[in-house]
Image 1 (cartoon, rainbow, N blue to C red):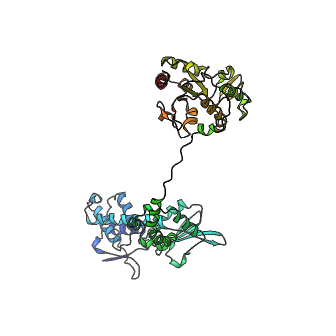
Image 2 (image 1 turned 135 degrees about the horizontal axis):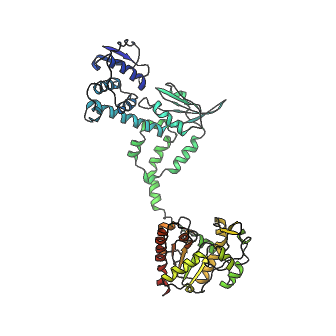
Image 3 (image 1 turned 90 degrees about the vertical axis):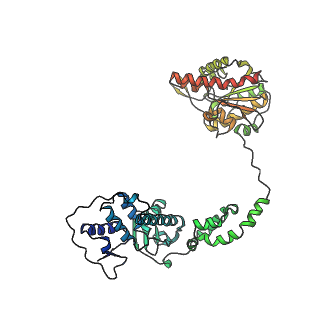
Length: 468
């Protein structure tokens, strides 16, 4: 009988070296007595024979690394027995879930992993001030020797601070660069409180929801044995006791009515200028709310009948619109007119305008390249759009492009997901969004452009019934 003592009973490499030597000497598992400590010393291992060992599945070594951290004193013997069987003809041993050794090993691994999860959840570091700065120290009492397995998790989470994790079996220390391990510690080696814990308890109490309290579930997930190390634990009995009265008070309290969503256009309506549509056009010509007026030729205001049933809103003028002072007269406007003709909607029945009233561009030689107006510029122009809609009082709005759609529906509106359908607005009007015709002109593939144009025509056809 060989008595074997390991320097570190939880370390895979230590156990693996010893187990390999026993296998090479052909020592039967029944002839090995594994000892947790070296009080009586261990025997000298026999010299290795000339046999070659059969390969061992990587899955077994991964499993052994976890099981070795378990507190069961039989773990070394069981693992060696499993190793013996794997190298003596039972290659498929790990697949036998009903085997006693296999079932025991997986049960141990499950318990170790659960213990590691609890350590990650319930460790609380407390600040200790030293001459070299702050060090954060935590005390925890795991059921198994899992510090080596869990410490890298805290390195990743608290990389920028120095900390020490103390347990009865082992300690871990991170200095901001290197992770080291030491022998076990005592509870009194760790601080019992720090300046931040009152703040943490205040936060914990404020987020406690009595309506969601389930005491049994809480005790399963946060067993009472961990409470002594948690600063919030002293609040739990009181919070549990007062949960029912607080929940009843919440039920009896009048329900809070959610505030209605206010779209950018509604918000702009409060700042909309006064006057008729013709007066608005004259006022807008002198608008200096943003800097877009400086390089632009002129303000491009909306046009169409003052009693139009539908207002079509584009994004911003282009080069030709800036020169002509009218919306939708360039290439995108011509494509828009073509689509209107296909759905038999006369343009002169629509009021057509833009979200932004000035042409924004970037000069490239003699060419002025279109540039998208930023959020501030869009917001500055929005009061003119709100005033136009207020004077015309249409039954519906049609938004061409994301800029127009988000002015009407809000920033969360997703054009390609919600296009082509009527949506009721808070003021009772209906609104619909589709792509801007300039989007169709930018598509490089003719087949794709043809499909997209057909979808655009279909979307615009929704206006037809409103004009009858």
